[in-house]
Length: 114
Image 1 (cartoon, rainbow, N blue to C red):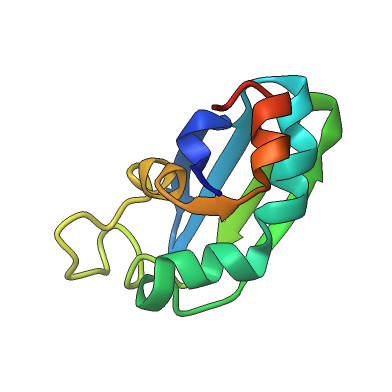
Image 2: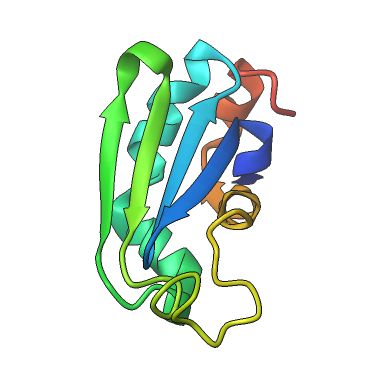
């Protein structure tokens, strides 16, 4: 079954130049292994599509039950260089939480997601 990341995590994002930084934090400790397994750098890059021109890097922060993503070349040059309407990374966290992942119905039930 498909589950939105919004049910598993909260997120914060920001930017430095042309790079977006997204922190994805598990709502419960038991959700972190699912995030680690399902929310890969490749899937995040696919989720954002043409918005991210460069690579996506993922860092694991198990002590915080969080993942950190760097999305390179995602802001058209960034802040003052871009012609984008909003050339900052503040809204990328909300966009990532809309991403859906596939988990088994049994796993969803055991975690209280259904």
